[in-house]
Length: 322
Image 1 (tube, rainbow, N blue to C red):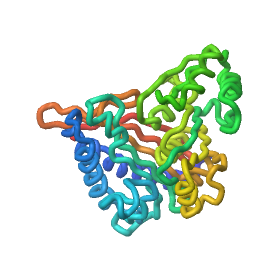
Image 2: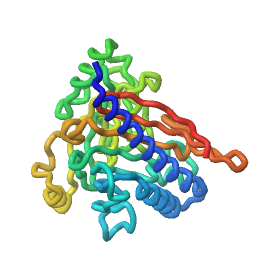
Image 3: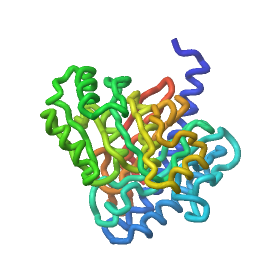
């Protein structure tokens, strides 16, 4: 039975998530004029500035833990930047104002503005490097092991879902580094669903039945991995990861960021150490998860996704007119 305190807290988290929804919407709208214009830097700059301006209006003490880079690399939304009015909750914030900048610049599908939020000190400070990942939805939670072969994970997930292995759909980024993973899926008689960029969408898809994706697997960006893990925590799914330092410099970078054992397998609860978290995304171009920004006369129409963790563990799609 819910207590009054539970209801008040849930209402507060929901209201806060709506504030961040506005942030994602404004970033997407600001980026929209650059769709298909071939200039990803201008697009990213427009989205970043709009996102930062809107974040500063929220009553919070927000800290960017995953953003546009270090202070000397990025003038806005840099790692360590403090945002908000200074009043309200202390929050860790992971952002990507334009996830899929190259896609957007070419007028292609699946670019979006994304934000993951959790209470202070609970999000993994992942360096900008490769991360090995595996993600599944709620029905297969607890059935994955990133240290096991993909074939074994497929068998475990199929059992949890009540499917034959041959009925599984495995989403994998279309890169040569994943050829072996793709081969293993084919050898098991299952389906592969390839995508070009934005693995956050694929991770979220595993938790939404209508999207018909059972597993996301592969190696991609670590910052995106933290954002995807937050989304799946809100959705009741599961996510495991391992950082993949490419050289000694990256290995040392992990140590400097407090990751004592950089190549340790990480569970979803180690990546996102709180249930008080939420994830928001707004489409910039049409994609698997969301429709892109549309303009009708003087009205801008956005399509967004909001997932809230804690006791709510729910999600909703929101179409808004601005």
